Image (cartoon, rainbow, N blue to C red):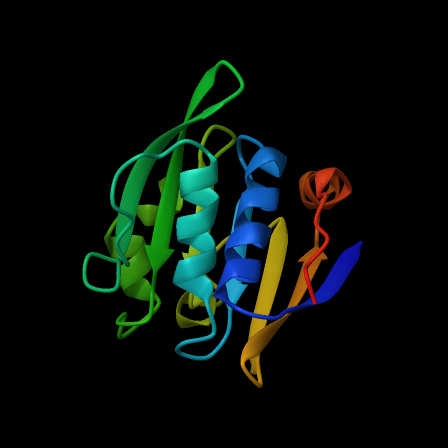
Length: 160
């Protein structure tokens, strides 16, 4: 299953993140693809805030990962926001012990997954963002039952 749309501006990116938050499931992994400035961190920030995180959401560019506690219904779930842009080799991902975080309890959102290609587990959902004029083109591709379930729950109508 896949979903494609155009996001007219940053408000539309935030609206997509807000729409994705109720679709999150424990164990879900989402890989974000796009050039610098395409909106990967902005989308993650919007997802986290819509999922109930009240504090600042910073890009984990230098720390590689930032953990957050969110609520899915009555269940507390750890969401890990990875940014692998500064990784020199895929082995760094293993050496840091990050692979263990990809399990049936946590939600993992990964920016720049190609930096750990061959080491990262397969995602449930790919999100491709590309700059299109003043807005963004976005494509969501489900690769698993969990990813399909997530997209089936998505209710998003961008204001074009």
